[in-house]
Image (cartoon, rainbow, N blue to C red; front, side, top):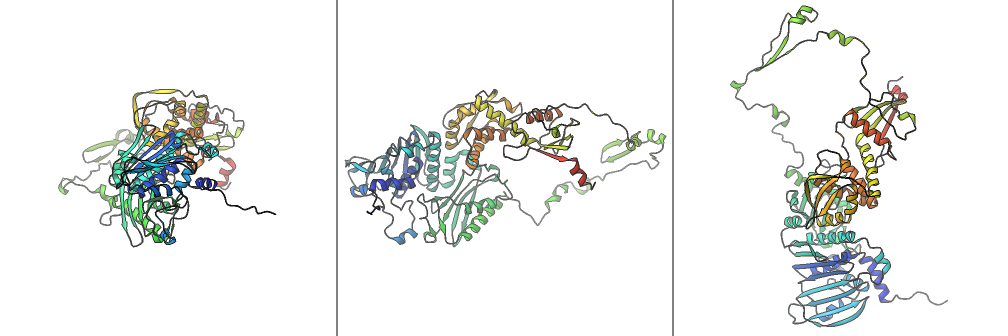
Length: 615
């Protein structure tokens, strides 16, 4: 039998490696930006077209490369950052593997212009599919400019797996934000299809966060700083009232490298444990500075995972530092042992001589069983100068009489397609308890309905219908509202604009990262609704549904809209409103379960009630 094992050609090996390093356009953006940082640039420009599918260009004013280095950087395992194995445990640079440029060159058409500051001419190199096409001297600016065109042009299967342009652009913006946050002293800019998305001047960390996410973030940030022998921690956390339903604004950096770590993330969330609901996530941008010898960054090709020598100590330091910052800025509850605040409202600021004691007047001859005294005498309670009288009831004895009271007019109910008679109300009179649940008597016992879950189910099915027939009715706003989103959310909103209009919104683009809301769905009723807040919550809920539940976009949009516009627990309902709610609930396809899969209706049988009383 002949030998069957052989070495792969370099072109094939590079394409295999590219599958690990370059998964989408955002991966190439990350590698190019990190290389520009390692080159010592203080100004970096990112230009993309067609969400990176047609063009990704990074221009920096870094150190540049010689002719030899320019050619060598496209070879596999060629790097200027590692010389020996021990260097892997002293890494301070962003890149070190020497695989990115070779992987990118294997699946794209690459053009690079580079020039050192001390040279008169630079070098031009063109590569297609790992094959060198051209290398010649060229007049160019100091630094390096790399253009990647037609990514995955020779691997069509990988190109077919790419998402829509708005989706891919959101990933590019995510990578850009991570790199820009890590290096606030570097000026960055981002252009997409000729439009400026970001222009970030060199600044302090707080200003960089505000420039990236919006001016309203200036009031949301709480500084964190802690220095220990194990790590130095600094950065900012968000105030609890501005927490969101998604984890999108959570950033950990170790030695200025963005990482993903569920264990350290838990340390921050635990510090907010008593301040946030379980499904809310706070903003944080935290930087950990640690001795490179105590970590291993060579765990995954994307370099977003790190192993630590003393993980538990780092967890404890982060948790205590965040907890202390929340307490220092009066975010978390504190105890003052010098004064019991529960009695502070009882302390009077008047002088003792100005305080008039209350006076009480009463009739010692009052007899409630005497008809004459009942008709002629009154009991008066007087405090300070306020006087009032309380007359005892003439018919107080009737309180103890058992009589047939009048049953109020009953509200009828149509149970739709429900065939089971256990849900047929006997009395047809609904009662609301704690403004959260609707209770009704049925033949088999008692029916209890969660009003919020019921309304969410009704709206969810209604919005799905609107998305299918694209006929959602709109109610025009008297005063159109503008909503300014982050570039990432703006790209998402643009991709959903047709579906959002199908729900009944009247929305149009209005300048940079801004939309104008001119109408809202009539399904939301005539309640006083903040259109801007509703739209922001709609986008946030959509992201949460797609990330956590992996739903398709229409289902995620209908789910988010229903959750954000449904009546909440604690809302008082009239008899007519309860009647309408239950009618619409039983007209739904799935009335028994909420959109979260939990029960909407609970029944308590008469036998179960009898058991409670030991009958």
